[in-house]
Length: 212
Length: 297
Image 1 (cartoon, rainbow over the protein chains, first blue to last red):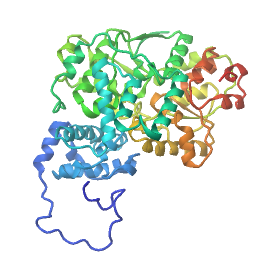
Image 2 (cartoon, rainbow over the protein chains, first blue to last red):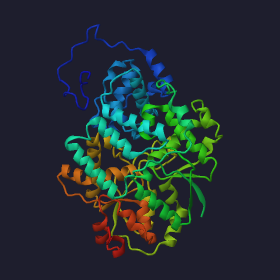
Image 3 (cartoon, rainbow over the protein chains, first blue to last red):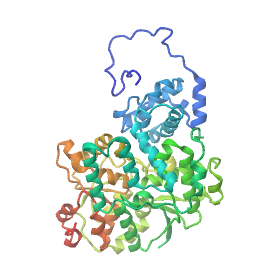
Image 4 (cartoon, rainbow over the protein chains, first blue to last red):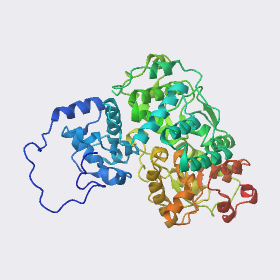
């Protein structure tokens, strides 16, 4: 984890003492070339953000983020990708689209968050929200296999990998599973698309950099 | 009444079976023919757009290509599937360079497909008039409902084409027309946390607790939704979330199609309602609905 950012939701209260001026080594050196690359790769005009923070004030999940959405954009503008590497924010975003809807400059933050997730995975960064990444990964694996989601297998696979199949969690999970089964809301036989040739072509390609 | 293309989505085959059955039941009662897309595939949901943009776009494109061969519009009951399909269509209008040859060969006119959310389709003035005409005169005023639309059906407006995205009215109007006591509230489109219910249930519990608090404060005795993800998050963990809130919460979470089932006097309605974890029995009894709608819940 990087240092808590002053004023960030889970950081320390900002000090009222006057901050010391950074030494020349500590000073941020904005790297504008990076922004142009991000914009080209993600298709999102992150440079259009002028920092009004409407995105972050309306974000329903900002309480659980270590960087506010506008801070993510600002770091990208300054070329400070390293600040985003350990951040939970991109994984906490639920893509509810409130930020984009209210952004006066229509900066597509949810799409930027998606691009960042893919870029961080491509760079081999461990996701701070490993369980969120794992769930997405297992979900996609199931889709690649059958063309449709099989919720039973997805949940069982997720629990086996995260420990939810053992210990006290297991009892709770099993109880919920049984309830859903009794209610007829748990399917035991997976559905699949009949035509699956296209799935091979789509998912057997090398991963990474597939985001236009 | 017309024939439309229908994309149910994976959840409606399992966790949202109640939704699927009620959609089919209501459309049958209204003589709306749902033509299910032949051999449809998953929309990719949050997983695909988070981890693999190209996959997300192709999964959408294949469904759109299938829909291009059937009747228009393409009606989608799940808000997330709707959003993914509408987003794919929007992006495909710019070009299809990322689409694999196998899907291109299907020859679909992706951009020509009109993608419509089911609750918009069923709350249109024409369908509302038809529902009123066929309603059996059931007094539903004891249902004091807040309508919960969630995120994905509304936003972003550039994709959904909606104008009342901060304060949608469709379900409010439909349910009012059926005699439900509809209560206004400010959380119509606030996020429930969606798929975080698996990896970060704590986040979903926090968001859903806020919704319960507000719905109760407004005097609601039920929540009516048109999104199966919202329904699951608000229905499945209510007991646990209420315990964490230190409060008694009894708020059945109904699909709008189930309420339509009650209004239209569809016999199967209790079968759909029985699948909920928060039983609507107490609600329907208190709202003085006929015994046969709740006695076996």
